[in-house]
Every structure is written in structure tokens, then in C-alpha cells.
Length: 347
Image (cartoon, rainbow, N blue to C red; front, side, top):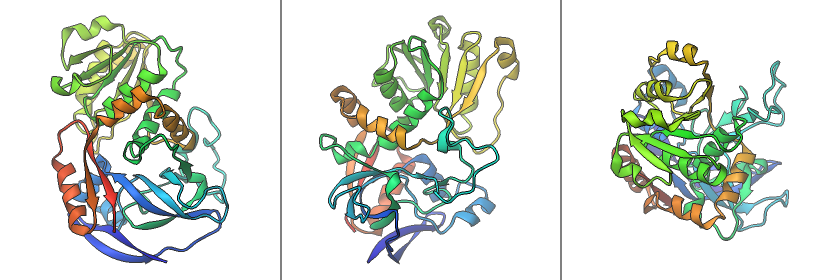
């Protein structure tokens, strides 16, 4: 069978491809239904990476947040018509074992496998009509979870991954820096998993008022220091992450843990003296694995959590052609609201 495919071939230019979808053992054929655009997709769309990197990436299908419907699965793990989440972090069963294997480490896992393939980064993403995909990277969506809500499972899984990275007692005060969609999802997810106090810190009070937290502060507020924050998550990214990290270092308790989740393309400056003086531990968290997605879908069965996540849906856009696809990227390019559009593919 053949299907349409949108690939980024140079900054701000998509081309339409007609590609054959071939069935392989261990894979299912999926029709892509819903998707969402993330900041990484926008970087590739605008060409905000160095030229050498972009030269290795283009042409490529973007988007790694998507759900679809099973069209064919000869393994019989899924039925035709099942709605599934596509886990974008792929580990080949035939890979060579690393000299320092992390896949079986419960604190790391395949998130950090150097042989991992991540769609829309070093492998084609989900901006296509049909895709053949490993059945081990598909998770059935429970009937009570709407497709648009399930599209956020990738971001929720990253929050789950960031939480499990630490051995927390459940009573620590957690500070989350960042008032964008990632910070909101971290706050919402931790609200379901953590018994301790959750504090949000960001730039825009209008956004922070929407966060499901115990309290919030704007950046630079003198009372942040009074909250006894023992664990802090940076969810800012970009060059602005330097300000967030340094404010975390100023306000976190001695012996605290700092988790970095944002991506900065350029090197940033942080106050290493504070790290040494306070004996802090710093962790890097990226991506997620299949079990994190499974946990995300369990959380989405909770009605209060589902309501928190539904607030992030700004609009639902039909993607019928490449013009619609361009419009979706142009919207997200300038989007400063707390949330994103859900794209419904009807190619």
C-alpha cells in the first residue's frame, strides 16, 4: 500500500512524498490519526540547528507525538481498529550489546541507549498517512480516553520518566521552573504521583494561575527561598534555562537534587560554586520508554488529571493537505499560549 508523507527538505519547506508502506515481521501498519507539534519540530522547521546537523537530517518526517489506528497486525497483539499510542523511542532487537549497557538499568533504561532511534530526530517521524511500526512500541489506548487527550501521552511519559529517575520518599517539596506546556504537564503529573508540596516558578502569572500546584511564584520572587525546596526540575530550555538553573541553585536546599529537562542549543553559564557549596546532585532527563507511556495512560484514566490535560487543547485542526500542514506549523511557531493544537490527519 502507498500513503502520503510530508517531509521537511529545507527550512520552511515541506515536500509531499508518496511512499510504499511495507509490512515486516514484528511490525504493524498504522494509520496516523492525531498528532501534535513540539518545540523540537519547530527548530527543524525554522532551521535553528547548525548547518551540518540539518544537512544530515533533511529530508525527514517531523512529529513524534501521535496516535493512530491499527490497519494490519499479523502478530495478533492488536486488532484492526484498535487505537494505539506510538512510542517514538525505538530499540532494535538485533542491536549489539553496549560495553556499558543501560537498557536494563531501572533509573535509565532505553531512553539513554546510544543505539536508540528517536523518530523525528534521527529517524522519520509521524507526519504521514500510514506507517509500519514495531508492535513493541505500540500501546492500546483505553476506550475511556479520547484521542485528542491521548496525544499528550508522550509529554506525560516524559514527566513520568523524570519522576522515576529519582528515589523520592513522596513527601519532598518539589519546585518546577517553567510556565510553558512542559512545566504544566510536570506539575499536573506530579500532582497525581507525589504527596509533597509542588511549587511552580515562571515568568507569566497569567499562565501560572492555571497550574494545578500548591503555590506559584514569578521568577525573582524573594519568598521562593522560604519553600524548603529539596527537588527542582528545570523545564525552560533554550538560553533562558541559564536564568532558571541559577535561580534553582540559589533557592534549593543543601543536598538537593536538580533535574534538567530543557534543551539549549548553545552552551549556557551556571554557577558551579553554588553546586559545590550546597553539595547538589544534577541529573539530565530526556525522552521516555514504553513503561512510562503505559503509566501515562493509566494516569489519564483519572478524571481530574484528564481535565487538567484537556485545558491544553487550544484548537483541533484538520490536516487534509500540505497547506493545512504549513498553517499548523506557522501557528505553533508563534504560539505563546499555554497549550497547542491537536492535528487530525485526513490525507
